[in-house]
Structures are given as structure tokens and as C-alpha cells.
Length: 365
Image (tube, rainbow, N blue to C red; front, side):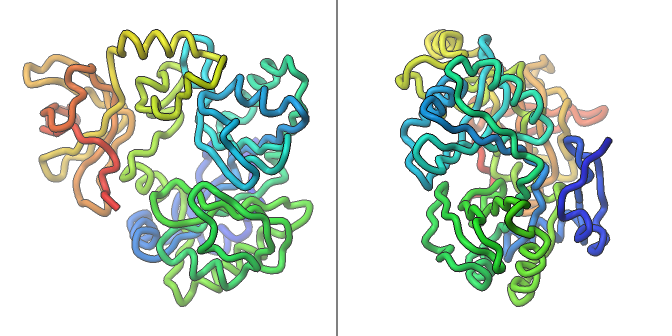
């Protein structure tokens, strides 16, 4: 059965086009993907991302469990700070990418992808030999993302904290629209200045928060934005999407996540395989590319070849960049060709479109 978020009634009022995404009935667009995309780049957009999963891990062994299952070093966190990371299987394949929030001493929140909630929870529980306390609160946490250059001005009208003072990848807990205990995090998936608001629905009303943000944003050209523009926005920044760009069949070192992988932190699942890859190199890399020929739009699954028509990879994400007005994408390419400026060819339907390997982000901020 498809689930609905607490904001479903708002999407109906706004005549959103709804789709099944990660087991949830989610808005893919309201006014249109292009309009919503440009609103976020130029002004602000409001997203319902309540389908994401939230696990709370606590107790004296909470950090030990997180260190075991993730590749980044969570010991560098302090209360009020968040970290981007990933979990790996023993063979180095990616279980999921996620955020880790340090809420307090021995208290953390993990934010995982909607389609992976059950799988991730089972995986973490399986690794919990140290008996940390694990709570899945995904169904009681609503998540609203306010993204765009006007986001600070909009949010400061409805909160008791100073949004400008919340630095990137840090968070504060405060009141929003009169609703208490909201986690206000300077994070997002668009590449713009913005915030993600974690709302415990047992303590606060997400509909009220959504409505007041929409009202406060009227003078700042705020628009409700769906998953369609969220995808076009993240692609322009080269942000990986689980299930497309990263999966159980890809490793962090193949996926340009080596900077996240802290080998010096001690033991973690997948470390030995990743160390071997680091020493020996990988046969392929996740790279970006820009299509040089107009009106040629790359899509996931399309073949990538060299000048001799030999297959050297495949597209994992692709679209027409709304901001740049050209085809862009990401894909796995044989390492020797995965070099900035290298000419490659994308097989779009029955023809080959010339492209050039580029290092994301495509949109330089």
C-alpha cells in the first residue's frame, strides 16, 4: 500500500501531480519542473521530503556502531553538526548514502533514503553487536526543505533562531511557526542556500509550518517544488542519487566518494576491499559529462563509447540542464577515459552524440 506524508492534503490543495516514489505518494511537480527549478535557483522553493527515513541511535555504544557501519569519521562530530557519509557491504558495495546528525552526547540521528528504510534498518541492526539503542522514527518525522537564495529571509520571519547564523552542515533546534522542537539544519540537495526542517509530528504540526512558510514566502517568490525539480537541481550539482549513480554494485572509490572514506579512523565494514581499490586503482569512475550537440538529452542506461565506437561505460543520470540549457549527465566510464576534457559519445536512440567529460558541479556557484 502506498503511504502518504502528513502534507498530502496541502499537495492536493495545490493541484500537485502525484507519483509513487519510494513507496510514498509524492508530488513530482506543481506549476511545472522548469518553473520550480528556476524558482529555487533564483528565489526559493519548498519541498516535502517527509518520505526520507530517520533512525535514532543512542547509548554509550552509539558512536561505535556508527563508526562500524559508515565510511566517514563520525568521531569528528560535535553536538549541532551533521555529516554526509555512506554505508558499505563487506564487498565495498554501497548500502546507502546518508546523513549523520550528532544530537547530543551518545545521541545521533541517521537520515536515509526512502526506498532503503527497511533494508538499512535491518542492516544496521544486524551489525549491532555492541547493543546500541536503535529506534526507527521515520513515520513520526516530517521533513520540509526550504531551498534557494531567499531562504534565510523567508525562514527568519517564522522562527526564533537566527537562520543566517546556522552554518552549512550544522543545525539548531528551535521554534518554527509557533511549533516547538524543530531541528533546523543548513543542508539540502539543490546546491543552493537552504534548510531542512525535521518535525516530530507528535510534538509539532508540519501542516502549520508548511502553510506559514508559504505565506512568509509570498513576497520572496517562493514556490512549492516537487521531486522533478529536486532531481534536475541535484544533477546540475553532480549529487549522486542512490539506485542510479550509486548502488550495491558500486563502491565509494568508483563513485568519487573517496574524500568521504576515512581509512585512518579504524575498522569499518568494507574497509579492506576499499583499501585494495585505493592501492590498485579502479577500472571505472563515476564522471560527469556535457553533451556538445544541442537538443540531445542523455538518459540513464544509455551507452557511452569512445571514438572507435567501443563501449566504455554507461549513463547513470542524465537530463537537459534547465539552468545551462544543454544535456548533462553522469555515468561510469573506463578509468583511462574518465579524464576531464576527454571526448566521449553518448548513444541517444539510434545516433551518437558527442560529449565531453566534465567534473561536477556543472553549474558553478
